[in-house]
Length: 464
Image (cartoon, rainbow, N blue to C red; front, side, top):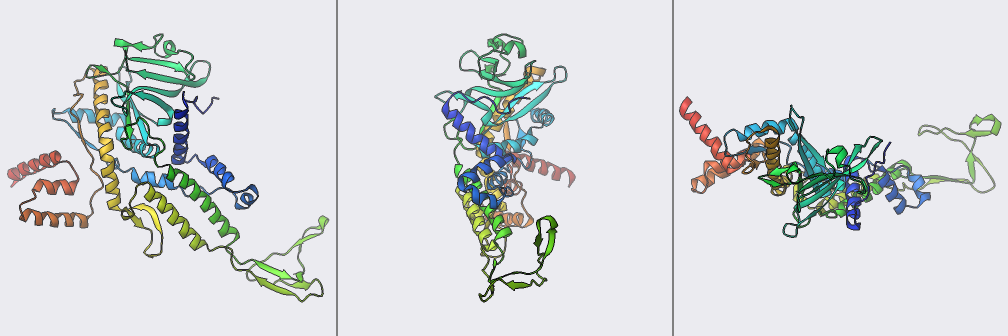
Protein backbone atom coordinates (compact mmCIF):
# COMPACT_ATOMS: atom_id res chain seq x y z
CA UNK A 1 0.00 0.00 0.00
CA UNK A 2 1.02 3.60 -0.47
CA UNK A 3 -0.15 7.06 0.48
CA UNK A 4 -2.62 8.22 -2.17
CA UNK A 5 -1.85 11.89 -1.45
CA UNK A 6 1.45 13.28 -2.76
CA UNK A 7 3.62 15.41 -0.47
CA UNK A 8 2.56 19.06 -0.14
CA UNK A 9 4.11 21.74 -2.39
CA UNK A 10 6.86 23.88 -0.92
CA UNK A 11 5.01 27.16 -0.21
CA UNK A 12 1.64 28.29 1.14
CA UNK A 13 0.33 29.72 -2.14
CA UNK A 14 0.99 26.47 -3.99
CA UNK A 15 -0.68 24.54 -1.17
CA UNK A 16 -3.85 26.65 -1.48
CA UNK A 17 -3.73 26.31 -5.27
CA UNK A 18 -3.34 22.54 -5.07
CA UNK A 19 -6.17 22.20 -2.54
CA UNK A 20 -8.56 24.15 -4.78
CA UNK A 21 -7.47 22.28 -7.92
CA UNK A 22 -7.93 18.88 -6.28
CA UNK A 23 -11.43 19.82 -5.15
CA UNK A 24 -12.26 20.73 -8.76
CA UNK A 25 -10.71 17.53 -10.07
CA UNK A 26 -12.77 15.46 -7.63
CA UNK A 27 -15.90 17.24 -8.83
CA UNK A 28 -14.97 16.41 -12.44
CA UNK A 29 -14.21 12.74 -11.74
CA UNK A 30 -17.12 11.87 -9.42
CA UNK A 31 -14.97 11.45 -6.31
CA UNK A 32 -16.55 14.29 -4.29
CA UNK A 33 -18.80 12.46 -1.85
CA UNK A 34 -16.63 13.35 1.16
CA UNK A 35 -16.51 16.98 0.05
CA UNK A 36 -20.31 17.08 -0.02
CA UNK A 37 -20.55 15.41 3.39
CA UNK A 38 -18.20 17.98 4.91
CA UNK A 39 -20.08 20.83 3.24
CA UNK A 40 -23.41 19.50 4.52
CA UNK A 41 -22.06 19.19 8.06
CA UNK A 42 -20.99 22.85 7.95
CA UNK A 43 -24.32 24.05 6.56
CA UNK A 44 -26.83 21.89 8.49
CA UNK A 45 -26.84 20.87 12.14
CA UNK A 46 -26.41 17.17 12.83
CA UNK A 47 -29.96 16.57 14.14
CA UNK A 48 -31.63 17.95 11.01
CA UNK A 49 -29.05 16.31 8.76
CA UNK A 50 -29.93 12.83 10.03
CA UNK A 51 -33.48 13.29 8.78
CA UNK A 52 -32.23 14.46 5.37
CA UNK A 53 -30.27 11.31 4.67
CA UNK A 54 -27.20 10.95 2.44
CA UNK A 55 -26.15 13.92 0.31
CA UNK A 56 -27.55 14.03 -3.23
CA UNK A 57 -24.78 13.62 -5.84
CA UNK A 58 -27.06 13.24 -8.84
CA UNK A 59 -26.66 16.89 -9.84
CA UNK A 60 -23.20 18.35 -10.49
CA UNK A 61 -23.45 21.83 -11.97
CA UNK A 62 -19.67 22.28 -12.17
CA UNK A 63 -19.09 19.11 -14.18
CA UNK A 64 -22.11 19.83 -16.39
CA UNK A 65 -20.89 23.31 -17.32
CA UNK A 66 -17.27 22.28 -17.88
CA UNK A 67 -18.22 19.30 -20.08
CA UNK A 68 -20.45 21.47 -22.25
CA UNK A 69 -17.71 24.07 -22.70
CA UNK A 70 -15.13 21.41 -23.62
CA UNK A 71 -16.18 20.93 -27.25
CA UNK A 72 -13.11 22.06 -29.19
CA UNK A 73 -11.88 18.52 -29.89
CA UNK A 74 -15.22 16.84 -30.55
CA UNK A 75 -13.90 16.50 -34.12
CA UNK A 76 -10.14 15.97 -34.63
CA UNK A 77 -8.26 19.13 -35.63
CA UNK A 78 -6.62 19.46 -39.03
CA UNK A 79 -2.86 20.15 -38.99
CA UNK A 80 -0.94 21.48 -41.96
CA UNK A 81 2.55 22.53 -43.00
CA UNK A 82 4.02 23.99 -46.16
CA UNK A 83 6.57 21.14 -46.35
CA UNK A 84 5.05 18.40 -48.54
CA UNK A 85 4.17 15.22 -46.69
CA UNK A 86 5.03 16.61 -43.24
CA UNK A 87 1.48 16.77 -41.92
CA UNK A 88 0.73 13.22 -43.09
CA UNK A 89 3.83 11.85 -41.34
CA UNK A 90 3.16 13.72 -38.10
CA UNK A 91 -0.48 12.67 -38.17
CA UNK A 92 0.59 9.02 -38.11
CA UNK A 93 2.81 9.71 -35.09
CA UNK A 94 -0.01 11.54 -33.26
CA UNK A 95 -2.57 8.85 -34.06
CA UNK A 96 -0.25 6.22 -32.60
CA UNK A 97 -0.04 8.29 -29.42
CA UNK A 98 -3.80 8.89 -29.29
CA UNK A 99 -3.25 12.62 -28.91
CA UNK A 100 -6.65 13.81 -30.11
CA UNK A 101 -8.43 11.17 -28.03
CA UNK A 102 -6.71 12.64 -24.96
CA UNK A 103 -7.31 16.22 -26.07
CA UNK A 104 -10.88 16.44 -24.85
CA UNK A 105 -9.87 15.19 -21.42
CA UNK A 106 -7.12 17.79 -21.38
CA UNK A 107 -9.62 20.53 -22.26
CA UNK A 108 -11.97 19.44 -19.46
CA UNK A 109 -9.09 19.68 -16.96
CA UNK A 110 -7.82 22.96 -18.42
CA UNK A 111 -11.18 24.73 -18.31
CA UNK A 112 -12.18 23.25 -14.96
CA UNK A 113 -8.84 23.65 -13.16
CA UNK A 114 -7.79 26.67 -15.29
CA UNK A 115 -4.59 24.92 -16.44
CA UNK A 116 -3.61 21.53 -17.81
CA UNK A 117 -0.46 19.93 -19.17
CA UNK A 118 0.73 17.36 -21.67
CA UNK A 119 3.93 15.47 -21.01
CA UNK A 120 5.58 14.18 -24.17
CA UNK A 121 8.22 11.50 -24.61
CA UNK A 122 9.31 8.96 -27.22
CA UNK A 123 9.49 5.45 -25.78
CA UNK A 124 9.87 1.93 -27.10
CA UNK A 125 13.56 1.68 -28.05
CA UNK A 126 13.74 -0.27 -31.31
CA UNK A 127 10.01 0.21 -31.85
CA UNK A 128 9.62 3.90 -31.02
CA UNK A 129 6.30 5.56 -30.37
CA UNK A 130 5.26 8.91 -29.07
CA UNK A 131 3.84 8.81 -25.55
CA UNK A 132 1.46 11.57 -24.44
CA UNK A 133 0.23 11.88 -20.87
CA UNK A 134 -2.28 14.35 -19.42
CA UNK A 135 -0.98 15.91 -16.20
CA UNK A 136 -3.38 17.85 -13.93
CA UNK A 137 -1.92 21.07 -12.48
CA UNK A 138 -2.36 19.94 -8.88
CA UNK A 139 0.40 17.38 -9.47
CA UNK A 140 3.00 20.00 -10.44
CA UNK A 141 4.50 23.25 -9.34
CA UNK A 142 6.74 25.45 -11.40
CA UNK A 143 8.51 28.73 -11.96
CA UNK A 144 8.77 31.12 -14.88
CA UNK A 145 10.84 34.08 -16.02
CA UNK A 146 9.84 37.68 -15.39
CA UNK A 147 9.73 38.35 -19.16
CA UNK A 148 7.20 35.56 -19.82
CA UNK A 149 5.46 34.89 -16.49
CA UNK A 150 2.94 32.41 -17.96
CA UNK A 151 5.58 30.23 -19.66
CA UNK A 152 7.29 27.72 -17.32
CA UNK A 153 11.07 27.41 -17.18
CA UNK A 154 11.06 24.88 -14.32
CA UNK A 155 8.49 22.19 -13.59
CA UNK A 156 8.41 19.62 -10.81
CA UNK A 157 5.91 16.77 -11.16
CA UNK A 158 4.93 14.33 -8.43
CA UNK A 159 4.83 10.71 -9.64
CA UNK A 160 4.41 7.29 -8.06
CA UNK A 161 7.34 4.94 -8.64
CA UNK A 162 8.42 1.53 -7.46
CA UNK A 163 11.65 2.32 -5.62
CA UNK A 164 12.48 -1.34 -5.02
CA UNK A 165 11.20 -1.38 -1.44
CA UNK A 166 7.69 -0.11 -2.09
CA UNK A 167 5.62 2.15 -4.34
CA UNK A 168 6.15 5.69 -3.14
CA UNK A 169 5.95 9.27 -4.27
CA UNK A 170 8.86 10.72 -6.20
CA UNK A 171 9.19 13.91 -8.19
CA UNK A 172 10.64 14.65 -11.61
CA UNK A 173 12.46 17.98 -11.78
CA UNK A 174 13.06 19.71 -15.12
CA UNK A 175 14.92 23.03 -15.02
CA UNK A 176 16.13 25.02 -18.06
CA UNK A 177 16.77 28.34 -16.31
CA UNK A 178 20.52 27.82 -16.49
CA UNK A 179 22.26 24.63 -17.51
CA UNK A 180 19.42 22.28 -18.34
CA UNK A 181 18.92 19.44 -15.88
CA UNK A 182 16.56 16.50 -15.40
CA UNK A 183 16.69 14.65 -12.10
CA UNK A 184 14.48 12.39 -10.01
CA UNK A 185 14.09 13.05 -6.29
CA UNK A 186 12.22 11.52 -3.38
CA UNK A 187 8.80 12.98 -2.71
CA UNK A 188 10.13 15.34 -0.04
CA UNK A 189 13.12 16.33 -2.19
CA UNK A 190 15.67 15.18 0.39
CA UNK A 191 17.08 12.23 -1.58
CA UNK A 192 18.42 12.16 -5.14
CA UNK A 193 17.11 9.06 -6.99
CA UNK A 194 18.53 9.96 -10.42
CA UNK A 195 21.11 7.20 -10.34
CA UNK A 196 18.41 4.58 -9.86
CA UNK A 197 15.97 5.83 -12.48
CA UNK A 198 18.10 7.81 -14.95
CA UNK A 199 21.41 5.95 -14.66
CA UNK A 200 23.29 9.11 -13.71
CA UNK A 201 23.87 10.41 -10.20
CA UNK A 202 22.77 14.01 -9.90
CA UNK A 203 20.62 13.80 -13.02
CA UNK A 204 21.10 14.48 -16.72
CA UNK A 205 22.95 17.78 -17.32
CA UNK A 206 24.06 19.84 -20.29
CA UNK A 207 24.42 17.82 -23.49
CA UNK A 208 23.03 14.76 -21.72
CA UNK A 209 19.73 16.57 -21.18
CA UNK A 210 17.23 14.63 -23.35
CA UNK A 211 14.74 17.28 -24.56
CA UNK A 212 15.70 19.85 -27.22
CA UNK A 213 13.80 22.09 -29.63
CA UNK A 214 15.59 23.99 -32.42
CA UNK A 215 18.94 23.43 -30.75
CA UNK A 216 17.81 24.71 -27.33
CA UNK A 217 16.79 22.72 -24.25
CA UNK A 218 13.07 22.71 -23.54
CA UNK A 219 10.65 21.20 -21.06
CA UNK A 220 8.87 17.98 -22.10
CA UNK A 221 5.61 19.61 -20.97
CA UNK A 222 3.14 21.86 -22.75
CA UNK A 223 1.15 24.09 -20.42
CA UNK A 224 -2.40 24.96 -21.51
CA UNK A 225 -4.25 27.96 -20.06
CA UNK A 226 -8.01 28.42 -19.98
CA UNK A 227 -7.22 32.12 -20.21
CA UNK A 228 -3.95 34.02 -20.47
CA UNK A 229 -3.64 36.09 -17.33
CA UNK A 230 0.08 36.79 -17.19
CA UNK A 231 0.46 34.23 -14.42
CA UNK A 232 1.70 30.67 -14.45
CA UNK A 233 -1.40 29.40 -12.63
CA UNK A 234 -4.85 30.90 -12.16
CA UNK A 235 -6.48 28.42 -9.75
CA UNK A 236 -9.27 30.48 -8.16
CA UNK A 237 -11.02 31.94 -11.21
CA UNK A 238 -14.61 30.66 -11.31
CA UNK A 239 -14.62 29.59 -7.67
CA UNK A 240 -18.24 30.79 -7.52
CA UNK A 241 -19.34 27.88 -9.70
CA UNK A 242 -17.35 25.41 -7.59
CA UNK A 243 -18.86 26.57 -4.30
CA UNK A 244 -22.27 27.05 -5.90
CA UNK A 245 -22.26 23.45 -7.13
CA UNK A 246 -21.86 22.21 -3.56
CA UNK A 247 -24.62 24.59 -2.42
CA UNK A 248 -26.86 23.27 -5.22
CA UNK A 249 -26.21 19.71 -4.06
CA UNK A 250 -27.26 20.72 -0.54
CA UNK A 251 -30.45 22.20 -1.99
CA UNK A 252 -31.18 19.07 -4.03
CA UNK A 253 -30.59 16.98 -0.89
CA UNK A 254 -33.20 19.13 0.86
CA UNK A 255 -35.52 18.78 -2.18
CA UNK A 256 -35.26 14.98 -1.98
CA UNK A 257 -36.01 15.14 1.75
CA UNK A 258 -39.07 17.28 1.02
CA UNK A 259 -40.34 14.90 -1.67
CA UNK A 260 -39.86 11.91 0.58
CA UNK A 261 -41.03 13.35 3.90
CA UNK A 262 -42.88 16.64 3.37
CA UNK A 263 -44.78 16.52 0.06
CA UNK A 264 -47.91 14.93 1.57
CA UNK A 265 -50.43 16.28 4.10
CA UNK A 266 -49.58 15.57 7.73
CA UNK A 267 -52.60 14.05 9.53
CA UNK A 268 -53.42 14.60 13.20
CA UNK A 269 -55.92 13.25 15.75
CA UNK A 270 -57.22 14.72 19.02
CA UNK A 271 -58.93 12.61 21.65
CA UNK A 272 -58.73 9.32 19.71
CA UNK A 273 -56.32 6.52 18.98
CA UNK A 274 -56.23 3.76 16.35
CA UNK A 275 -58.21 0.67 17.29
CA UNK A 276 -57.01 -2.87 16.64
CA UNK A 277 -53.77 -3.73 14.90
CA UNK A 278 -51.55 -6.64 13.94
CA UNK A 279 -49.30 -8.20 16.57
CA UNK A 280 -45.69 -7.80 15.44
CA UNK A 281 -43.93 -9.09 18.57
CA UNK A 282 -45.99 -11.19 21.06
CA UNK A 283 -43.22 -11.02 23.66
CA UNK A 284 -43.36 -7.22 23.77
CA UNK A 285 -47.12 -6.93 23.25
CA UNK A 286 -46.56 -4.57 20.31
CA UNK A 287 -48.91 -4.07 17.39
CA UNK A 288 -48.92 -2.01 14.21
CA UNK A 289 -51.63 -0.95 11.78
CA UNK A 290 -50.83 -1.27 8.06
CA UNK A 291 -52.25 1.70 6.13
CA UNK A 292 -53.08 2.27 2.51
CA UNK A 293 -55.03 4.95 0.59
CA UNK A 294 -57.84 2.40 0.16
CA UNK A 295 -57.90 1.17 3.77
CA UNK A 296 -60.34 2.21 6.51
CA UNK A 297 -58.84 2.86 9.96
CA UNK A 298 -60.91 2.50 13.12
CA UNK A 299 -60.41 4.88 16.03
CA UNK A 300 -61.52 4.74 19.64
CA UNK A 301 -61.97 7.61 22.06
CA UNK A 302 -59.35 8.13 24.72
CA UNK A 303 -61.38 10.33 27.07
CA UNK A 304 -64.31 12.62 27.44
CA UNK A 305 -62.88 15.19 24.97
CA UNK A 306 -64.79 15.37 21.70
CA UNK A 307 -62.74 13.45 19.11
CA UNK A 308 -61.28 15.44 16.22
CA UNK A 309 -59.43 14.35 13.08
CA UNK A 310 -57.75 16.58 10.45
CA UNK A 311 -54.66 17.25 8.38
CA UNK A 312 -52.14 19.99 7.67
CA UNK A 313 -51.28 21.06 4.14
CA UNK A 314 -48.18 19.58 2.52
CA UNK A 315 -44.94 20.94 3.94
CA UNK A 316 -43.35 21.61 0.55
CA UNK A 317 -44.22 21.95 -3.14
CA UNK A 318 -41.53 19.90 -4.97
CA UNK A 319 -42.31 21.50 -8.35
CA UNK A 320 -41.79 25.08 -7.17
CA UNK A 321 -38.81 24.16 -5.02
CA UNK A 322 -37.14 22.27 -7.89
CA UNK A 323 -37.75 25.20 -10.26
CA UNK A 324 -36.14 27.61 -7.82
CA UNK A 325 -33.06 25.37 -7.49
CA UNK A 326 -32.75 25.06 -11.29
CA UNK A 327 -32.89 28.84 -11.67
CA UNK A 328 -30.21 29.19 -9.01
CA UNK A 329 -28.02 26.68 -10.86
CA UNK A 330 -28.54 28.49 -14.18
CA UNK A 331 -27.39 31.73 -12.54
CA UNK A 332 -24.19 29.93 -11.54
CA UNK A 333 -23.54 29.04 -15.18
CA UNK A 334 -24.00 32.65 -16.27
CA UNK A 335 -21.61 33.79 -13.54
CA UNK A 336 -19.05 31.43 -15.11
CA UNK A 337 -19.30 33.28 -18.42
CA UNK A 338 -22.11 31.49 -20.27
CA UNK A 339 -24.50 34.00 -21.77
CA UNK A 340 -28.22 33.45 -21.28
CA UNK A 341 -28.59 33.69 -25.08
CA UNK A 342 -26.31 30.66 -25.44
CA UNK A 343 -28.48 28.47 -23.21
CA UNK A 344 -31.35 26.30 -24.41
CA UNK A 345 -34.58 25.97 -22.46
CA UNK A 346 -35.48 22.54 -21.14
CA UNK A 347 -39.19 23.06 -21.68
CA UNK A 348 -41.61 24.93 -23.88
CA UNK A 349 -43.20 26.30 -20.72
CA UNK A 350 -41.99 29.91 -20.45
CA UNK A 351 -42.11 29.65 -16.65
CA UNK A 352 -39.51 26.90 -16.64
CA UNK A 353 -36.05 27.82 -15.52
CA UNK A 354 -33.05 27.39 -17.75
CA UNK A 355 -31.23 24.10 -17.76
CA UNK A 356 -27.48 24.24 -18.13
CA UNK A 357 -27.67 23.16 -21.75
CA UNK A 358 -25.93 25.09 -24.51
CA UNK A 359 -27.66 25.78 -27.79
CA UNK A 360 -25.82 25.04 -31.05
CA UNK A 361 -24.76 28.66 -31.31
CA UNK A 362 -23.65 28.51 -27.69
CA UNK A 363 -21.48 25.47 -28.46
CA UNK A 364 -19.89 27.28 -31.41
CA UNK A 365 -19.26 30.35 -29.28
CA UNK A 366 -17.49 28.14 -26.72
CA UNK A 367 -15.39 26.65 -29.53
CA UNK A 368 -14.38 30.07 -30.83
CA UNK A 369 -13.37 31.24 -27.37
CA UNK A 370 -11.27 28.12 -26.80
CA UNK A 371 -9.52 28.25 -30.17
CA UNK A 372 -7.63 31.41 -29.26
CA UNK A 373 -6.23 29.89 -26.08
CA UNK A 374 -5.66 26.30 -27.17
CA UNK A 375 -4.19 26.83 -30.65
CA UNK A 376 -1.07 28.45 -29.18
CA UNK A 377 -0.37 25.45 -26.96
CA UNK A 378 -1.43 22.92 -29.62
CA UNK A 379 1.16 24.35 -32.01
CA UNK A 380 3.79 24.04 -29.26
CA UNK A 381 2.70 20.41 -28.81
CA UNK A 382 3.16 19.76 -32.55
CA UNK A 383 6.62 21.36 -32.50
CA UNK A 384 7.82 19.39 -29.48
CA UNK A 385 6.34 16.13 -30.77
CA UNK A 386 8.23 16.65 -34.05
CA UNK A 387 11.49 17.54 -32.32
CA UNK A 388 11.39 14.59 -29.91
CA UNK A 389 10.45 12.22 -32.75
CA UNK A 390 13.34 13.47 -34.89
CA UNK A 391 15.82 13.00 -32.02
CA UNK A 392 14.64 9.43 -31.38
CA UNK A 393 14.21 8.19 -34.95
CA UNK A 394 16.37 10.39 -37.18
CA UNK A 395 13.30 11.70 -38.99
CA UNK A 396 13.30 15.20 -40.53
CA UNK A 397 9.91 16.55 -39.48
CA UNK A 398 9.86 20.38 -39.36
CA UNK A 399 9.97 21.69 -35.82
CA UNK A 400 8.33 25.04 -36.57
CA UNK A 401 5.79 26.45 -39.01
CA UNK A 402 2.89 24.18 -38.02
CA UNK A 403 -0.69 25.35 -38.43
CA UNK A 404 -3.88 23.93 -36.92
CA UNK A 405 -7.58 24.33 -37.73
CA UNK A 406 -10.56 23.13 -35.72
CA UNK A 407 -13.50 21.79 -37.78
CA UNK A 408 -16.08 22.72 -35.17
CA UNK A 409 -19.67 21.60 -34.86
CA UNK A 410 -21.30 20.74 -38.24
CA UNK A 411 -23.98 23.10 -39.48
CA UNK A 412 -27.55 21.94 -39.85
CA UNK A 413 -29.28 22.06 -43.24
CA UNK A 414 -31.22 25.20 -42.28
CA UNK A 415 -28.06 26.92 -41.06
CA UNK A 416 -26.23 26.12 -44.30
CA UNK A 417 -29.18 27.42 -46.32
CA UNK A 418 -29.17 30.69 -44.36
CA UNK A 419 -25.42 31.13 -44.87
CA UNK A 420 -25.71 30.49 -48.62
CA UNK A 421 -28.55 32.99 -48.98
CA UNK A 422 -26.60 35.63 -47.07
CA UNK A 423 -23.49 34.97 -49.19
CA UNK A 424 -25.46 35.27 -52.43
CA UNK A 425 -26.69 38.70 -51.38
CA UNK A 426 -23.17 39.82 -50.51
CA UNK A 427 -21.73 38.30 -53.70
CA UNK A 428 -24.19 40.30 -55.82
CA UNK A 429 -22.83 43.44 -54.14
CA UNK A 430 -19.29 42.29 -54.90
CA UNK A 431 -18.17 42.08 -51.28
CA UNK A 432 -17.89 38.27 -50.87
CA UNK A 433 -15.98 35.52 -52.65
CA UNK A 434 -16.59 31.80 -52.94
CA UNK A 435 -13.71 31.31 -50.49
CA UNK A 436 -15.78 33.10 -47.84
CA UNK A 437 -18.69 30.77 -48.52
CA UNK A 438 -16.55 27.63 -48.25
CA UNK A 439 -15.01 28.90 -44.99
CA UNK A 440 -18.44 29.57 -43.46
CA UNK A 441 -20.07 26.31 -44.53
CA UNK A 442 -17.15 24.03 -43.60
CA UNK A 443 -15.73 26.11 -40.70
CA UNK A 444 -12.14 25.97 -41.95
CA UNK A 445 -9.33 28.48 -42.39
CA UNK A 446 -8.97 30.64 -45.51
CA UNK A 447 -5.89 28.68 -46.59
CA UNK A 448 -7.72 25.34 -46.29
CA UNK A 449 -10.73 26.74 -48.16
CA UNK A 450 -8.56 28.08 -50.99
CA UNK A 451 -6.76 24.72 -51.38
CA UNK A 452 -10.06 22.83 -51.42
CA UNK A 453 -11.54 25.15 -54.07
CA UNK A 454 -8.45 24.79 -56.25
CA UNK A 455 -8.84 21.00 -56.06
CA UNK A 456 -12.55 21.30 -56.91
CA UNK A 457 -11.73 23.53 -59.90
CA UNK A 458 -9.16 21.04 -61.22
CA UNK A 459 -11.62 18.17 -60.82
CA UNK A 460 -14.38 20.08 -62.59
CA UNK A 461 -12.06 20.97 -65.48
CA UNK A 462 -10.86 17.39 -65.79
CA UNK A 463 -14.14 15.52 -65.48
CA UNK A 464 -16.52 17.89 -67.26
